[in-house]
Structures are given as C-alpha cells and as structure tokens.
Amino acid sequence: MISTRFLIWLAAAFLFFIGLGYFFYGLQPVNVSGTDAVRLTIDPGDSFRDIGASLSQNSLIRSVTVFKLYSVFMGRAHTFKPGSYALTQAMSVPEIVYLLTAGGAGDIAVTIPEGVTLKDVDALLTRAGVAEQGEISALRPLDFADDYDFVDTLSSLEGFMFPDTYRFEAGMSGDSAARVMLDNFEKKVWPLLKDDPDWYEKLIIASFVEREVPAFEDRRKVAGILIKRLEARMPLQVDATLSFAKCGGYLLMCDNVAVSRNDTELSSPFNTYKIRGVTPTPIANPGVEAVKAVINPIETPYWYYLSARETGETIFSRTLDEHNSNRAKYLSTSSE
Image (tube, one colour):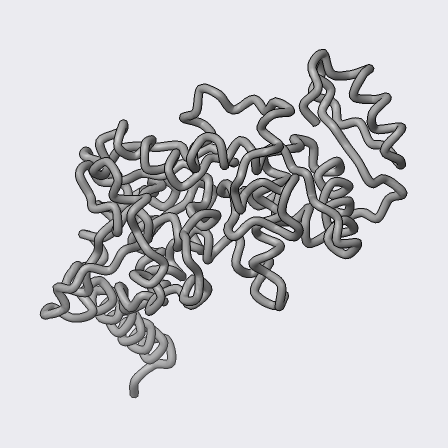
C-alpha cells in the first residue's frame, strides 16, 4: 500500500517540475520573430516593480514573476540602470536583464535643465553628440500626433521636452530623442493636465513661472497673480517672455537674457507687455513643480511682483504705486 508520505513527496515533486517548467518557459522570448524595436525608458528612481510592469505592458516578457525571480537569482534585481533601451520580443529574459543592467557602453548622459527652451535642448543634444544640429528644433507636432494625441493640434513642441537627466544613444535621430522626452512628459506631466480643458494655457503659464520664480510657494502666488490678470484682461508683463522674444527662442544659450525698459517695446507675439493673454506657445520646458504650482495657485491680494536683484527674493505688491516703490528699493536698474 502506498504511504501518505510517499504521495506527498510525489505531489511535491510534480509541483516542483511543473514550476520549473513554467520558470524556463517564462525565460523564453515572447515571439522569436518579433524583431521590431520597442523603446523602453528607465527613469532614475524607477523601482524593480515599475520596470517589470513596463516590460509586461510592452509585451516584452511572458511573466513578471519569472522576470523578478531570475533577476533576484542572478543578483541583478537592484542594478538596473536608467536609460533608453531598444528591446524586441525576440529577446529572452536573460538577454533583457543583461542589457538593462549593462546600461549600454555607447549611452550618453544628458541633463536637460528646467526652464530651457526647445532650441536650447537642440543645442545641448548637439553638443553632447546625440543628434544633428537643428534636428530637434525642426520637429513638428504633426510628426508625433499618432503617438501623442496631446500635441496633435499644436504648432510647436516647446514645453514638451521634459527636463530630466537622460541616457541617449550616440548619434540617434532627433525624432528618437524627442520621443524619449515626450514619453517622460506623458508619464510625469500629462496626468496632471489631461483633465483640464485649459491645460495648454496652464502649461504656458507654467513655463512663465519656471523662468520667473524659483520657490514653489512663490510660484503658486505668481500663478494666482497671472491668472487674476488674465481674468481682468490686463497685460501679463512677464519679463521672461521678452527674453524669449529678443533671444529668438533661446534662453540658456543667449548672452543677452537681461531685460531693459526698451525691450518692452519689442514687436512680438511673445511680448506680454504689448499683447493681452498668454503667448502662442510656452517659452520654456517647465518641470513638474512649476506645473503643480499653476494648477494649484494661491489667491492673494497682490497684483504685482518682482525679483530682488541682490537676493532673488520675490517681492509682492498690492498696488502699482507699491510696486514702483519696491522697484526703486530692490532693483538697481528698472526692468520689471
């Protein structure tokens, strides 16, 4: 008569071999004929779970559990490197794990600072050897409308090149580099804006406060002032828009960013001393904090603000007389 202990061992062995078979099945490529490249981006701070989920959502692995077990067994669970990777469904889990932990010897790390413009991004990537000069700034939203519906009716990609530290492949196309940054925008900024019918106006204002004010709470106050001015049909009078206009769409790469009183007479749709309303496009690529400040503005009794020349502190005023007094006190030469 077969003993109960033997039956238990037999069942355990059966389950073990079933599990082992599933494990090795899960290591295999999803589709050995799937040679089309899938772009996967790992951002700094992405967790092991995030990476597994991204691989699964892009149909690059058969099982998240097998991917995690293999990574743990091989001691690579916490060694995945930020970067942009071209993967295919023909890759096995060991191949994918190796690539994501190797990081790619040809990768180039490029930091896109908050508040730089589309043309600045173009110059930064050109200088780093990522893309050819003029590639990024020549791109049109229509080129990306099929994949990013938030740009399908726009005239410019200004504001959508999300500031962050990226790892790009040397010599990659401007189109591919832009998609990496648009993916990041879609992941980190679009969820904050997508339910707002005036989201593009909010993004434009976020580009203003990104350039004008450094502290988050002050940004919220400035956002409240700008929104209040819009509602009152007052000119916004944002100096950073003059810098954008006089520098031809550059800020970081412009030697003459400082604004003078004469600049307020510039004939430009980006001169917010002359036009009413916001500019046609953002004037820079804002970070998440600037966007959050605009979607959560603070109502105050203030109508004016300036940045103290010596300290950079934001000084607020209720009236024009008070503002003019603060200009004389905090600015050595009038530019606000």
